[in-house]
Length: 208
Image 1: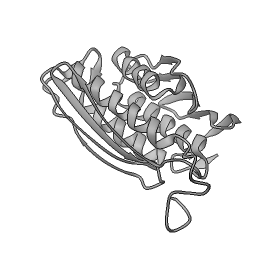
Image 2: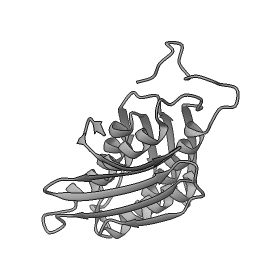
Image 3: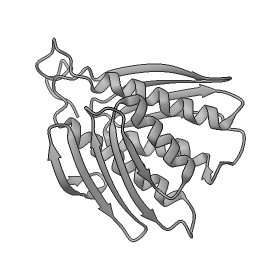
């Protein structure tokens, strides 16, 4: 499968369930994604808080998600975080196919104690991201918090999605988790089949 990321191995595809893998000198990432799942997650990136955020994305988006990633964590966390987000985005794009018959747009606001995040997404094939999450510290666990925004931007680019995600809060853990939960809920709506639509949700007659 040729994508903006280069060549990915499509190991399996059935309906809206896909398994893809990308290998570079820095990382090896394999993602299995079922858009029509139940929220089951098995995520292993070597970065505990990142695993937690991705599992939350799956649970609240009702995505069945398995991620196996190894990377050069001896250098730092950047390559692993980025490449997992890119392959996850590419898997979503592959699962949605021509994106016909889906709602396309979704939005959600999620609170977590003192924090609140709002995600608005268009999975219509236009890659763009506006992320504003005012973290206070440098890290949550072993995850550098500046990489949260980068991961979300990378995911949107590879998925062919326009994502606006903003939040407020005093606790960085809560803010990051609220952001991923809001994204999950917005994705769930955007990817759902629209029973009243037979083609793509565009007056142009095509998406991308």
